[in-house]
Amino acid sequence: MNPVGSRSDPYRKFNFRVEIEDIPSADFLSVEGIETLTDVIHYREGGENPQPRKLPGLHKYSNITLKRGVTANRDLWDWRKTVLDGRTERRNGSIIILDEDRDEVLRVNFFNAWPCGWKVGSLDALESEVLIEELELTVESFSLD
Image (cartoon, rainbow, N blue to C red; front, top):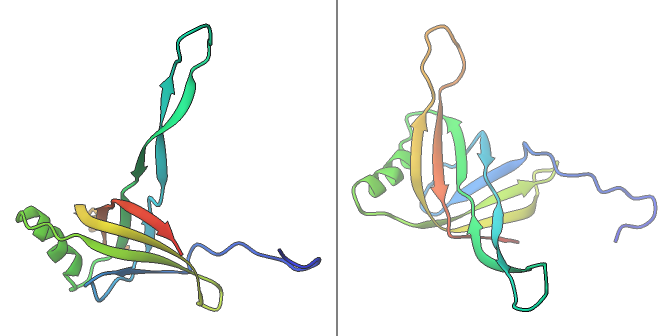
C-alpha cells in the first residue's frame, strides 16, 4: 500500500527486454499476445434450475508475436527451421518489463515455446522504413515473477 500522497505511475510500454533460452540476441520492437483464457463450461443440473452453472474448463495461452528489424542475424530463422525440419526445439523465455531507470519490475515467463510462424514484412521500393521480421511462438504456459 502506498503512503498518502505518493504516486504509483504505470510502466511505459517501450521499456522491455526479451530473453529466450539459447538465443543470444533478442532485441525486439514489439511483443504482442500475452494473454491467458479459460474456457467456460455450461452445466445444467437436473430439476427446475433454469440457469446453468458455469465451470472452468481448459486453460489456454495465446501465441506470442515478436517483431524486430531484419539484420544479418539468423537466430530466429534457425530456430524456426528446426520445426520445418521436424526437429522442434522447445525453449523457455521471459518478457521483462523495466521501469524508467531500466530496472526490472515484472517478468512474464513463458514455457515450452516453439516457433509456429515466421515472416518478413513487405518489400516496397517507394518506402524507406526498416524491414521487419516477425516470429510467432506457441507457448504452453505463462507465469509472473
